[in-house]
Length: 175
Image (cartoon, rainbow, N blue to C red; front, side):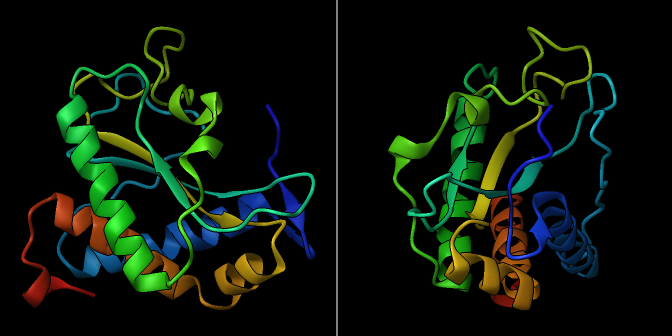
């Protein structure tokens, strides 16, 4: 498995962990129970929502922005789509980052191992709504600087997307 992108002295896993920790704290402050999972997902992991947070990269360093995808195979596609919409809307509003082209949503995103119960034992339960967000491009100095200098802003966008999906009142519970 690839360790991910790196640029500007940052490895992708470092940025991912930074964003995950900030997001978890914000969600917990809003009363949501959060599990930060290791790379090996517990067998048939079940939750009200599963969000995998990543930073993207491209070899040419030309792309920037964020994108969100759901599992390619899903037993709850309407729920997955609602989670994806909530994340797109709230992350974009919080961060001001541009939305990357859907043409850049890769097979690795939609068939991400944690979603892929057909191929992997260590994957989420079929009934768990899921999404993967590429929060910005490590290879874009603008995106990377934003993600590393303002991880709490990016985390707020993800957390608000999850809260919206969980139907919590954004007016009173928005971060």
